[in-house]
Length: 284
Image (cartoon, rainbow, N blue to C red; front, side, top):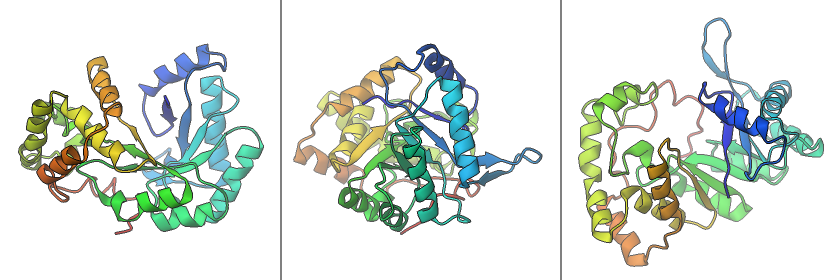
């Protein structure tokens, strides 16, 4: 399934997706997902969260207009706004289905308990969460909750923001990235340690005759039938590696060897800076 994602939280490059979709006049070969729930103060630029019905529907309507669509397949609440109970938010999202504006809905970066509360009101199609060989928290309840409730776990950054590839980020690339330059896993010192710590995976991939990113994707998908991986790339060559990984069925002994080489806890640094850590729900 091809699922392009849009969001008002992302900057200008996403506008190319809007322009392409607008030319399709509602007919597209893709499954379309979009998000709302992160906002910026117009005066200070401060990042915040808004799960009010007015904000969510207004942002959805803007996305539909930009894309030239009457309905999206999947609408995410990008971050939970603790001012609004998740049951009430879920009830409102169900009205968007009734209005024909969305086919289904999900949440991003929520705890298993929040998923269970929402699913008691209406089926939740998907939960988006970072999951990879270097970010294993979903194994402590979220994967299990998704399996029990029939919810897809949509794993973002399954290649570890490039660390789990044959071309991990260089200090220059990190410095040029607004996101990576203050990410604890990529700051000076941690980056070098993480590249060295992940080298055994690259060596294993070479032995297997596959790209390291392919092996990383294959490992993620092998953890549960409920998992869908959504890697990002700007390179067609890297895209081919990701597709190859999705087509792999790694044998149990290979999965065990991957786990031996990159055991739980191998990665240096938190996955988010202090500022970006505000919003994702902690549950372990």
